Image 1 (cartoon, protein in one colour):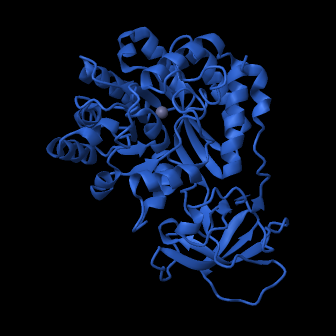
Image 2: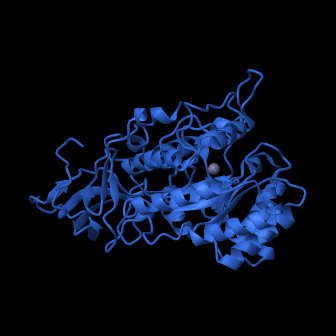
Image 3: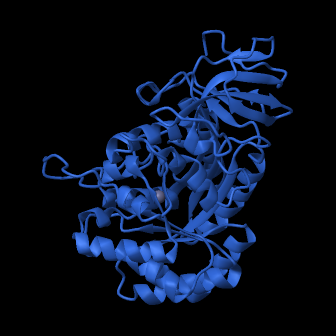
Length: 437
Ligand SMILES: [Zn+2]
């Protein structure tokens, strides 16, 4: 990373004068600066963080790397992605950038192309990108519309095995909630998801019998001990209130598992009193919410009349945070009809989220939204924070404060896993060319 700061290959070293964020280093008791940072020394040995203490200005030794105030963050946790859809853009672009255009294009591509080999190669490509950028855990949604579930879930299981120790991979099934009406199919899918140790997920919208459909979801999740993960209200329609219906269902069922709800875009368009009632219910029900700022900015308020978008598409994270609702940001789609861009780089997501959602002045605890909060929702053993006794998994950046960190792509960041700097080469797009015909 220049300036002589190189992680010793032996795996035994001290990082001196690392800048750690207080929100992500709960065990470090030292005064933070105005941005929440603490200058600290980190001892690493045998793949583990042995000690984190406020910087001592100790004499340099051969195994000491002076970071001179560069920021060190825990590895990222990306709790909402679609690596089964990723990178199909060259063969199936979104014709007009709309949500409907995305749905139709993705459906057609799935029906035409999603063999086990096609999925495995694209999923592996996505995971190599995420790993190189510093992500240690990732949840993907898996399109589970028949007969795709029979093809995709075994590929997910193989991929989870292949990546074990590098990326902790989770999956949630995905289908339009009205499909629950096909009871035998739904029962089979729930059993398949449970057998894979997955999460039960669906897309919710204002179906006429939404409450009854949600009751079936919650009953199945309770029966099989599954957590839940919804795509909700990814629209500007004022009448889209499935977030509130999910919260009401959780209360009705006294559901004890974790519930993550993504998108919730329409909430930002609704009157204040309705918003307040919804968020009170969401908080009471213990739901968590993930915002997908890149995808929302791309799809929401897309206009076909040549006019300019007027709203940002994201949900009300500040109001949720103020009520104690756990909130995250995540990648969502990458180079597919739902989002033409992206590389599963959580620093890019957080940088964009900071601008789109104003997660700054003060930054406060917002960094938790890409690390500790999703780690808790995903029930990860590694809590997404830096602590003595924890695995030495972190990212060393060039930036020394928020403006430096969030102004450049930080492509020369160093990703350390179990005490060793990893090879950060990104896969070449050309690798997938033969799949794109
Ligand atoms: Zn999604």
